[in-house]
Length: 79
Image (cartoon, rainbow, N blue to C red):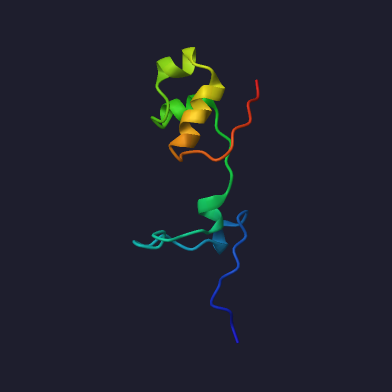
């Protein structure tokens, strides 16, 4: 008997499921929950942080605001 849950290897694109409308409505799959590393420039480009804020505010304060808004879960400051 074949399992209804497909095994996905995140490093091999051919194992991924093609997106369909409604597929991610209540998702908790690897693609939705994988940690990613972003830099301040990425947050500015995505519109999550204002360029002025990125230049003049403490990164820890920005991270605190983004955590409170539910946009990030973890912050690790690296130079």
